[in-house]
Length: 386
Image (cartoon, rainbow, N blue to C red; front, side):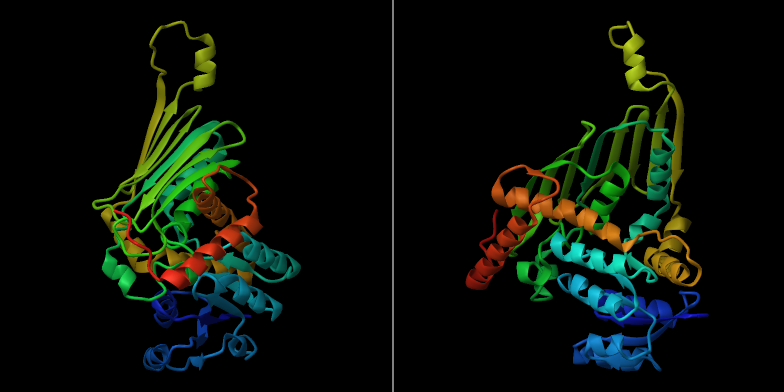
């Protein structure tokens, strides 16, 4: 195989952008041969913008057409596991958009299906793993220079969404359409990075407020507290109604502190770890000497380059290289369940008013989600919480 033939399932807002990446030849050794969507308007768009690309209304027909080697699934969240399993069963390399799904049991089934297909590549579009600052943070943590993590905090409130955003589509801001709000729509990348850098927590306490100053049925204001097996703690705060917002990640560890904010990473490395320093220190209020302060920025030119070439493009290139040359995936598909587990745990804790230990009670989560979907059918839009 010299080129990977791709089929894109779902050519709405995100799927159509993926199509254009192929049209403008941004994916070396990858070519778009088929697309699928149930919308007549999307068909018209495809016929106008994607000459030579075969259009399907049924995703199974696309998968069985013999026109594609791999699929990129960019449909509504609930469909990702179902379509992913269908693609793998037909011997197709499978890349899914985030999130991996709405609830972990469905994603677990997808992961199991992928394990059985040893020769197929299975990935997820966690494009923010290509960000140079997060990759540097990952390297610093894995090198041991930070030492044992004590605390990880992330405030991510800089994606303002007005009522007009939720009004543009009937599925937005609903349990039946999206399976949640900020946690499942805006935050999958951050929740993935949260565990990619800090590991999986053992206990979660979540507060997810529904419809704060918005006429929606799902959460748009979240505060979550985490505990980890080594005794570390974490806090994750997000909202879609704050302006101006904040995007600040802090990781405090035994040998220093790492902060990422405003396209800048700052790593303060101590001469000696706090645990070792404390064991021998005799002063009343000392300061631990700093060994090194590392500062890395993404320049304006770097921002522009990243915008033009796109982190999504980087994932697609990596996925193509994994198929053709066996290159390791930046975002393996089976890791999609990790961030979703945290999201489900926050929701479940908020719904029950109780701490949630991991692994979560998947059956209870699905029962609680079903309750909210039924309430939504009966009451349509819940009263806004002011």
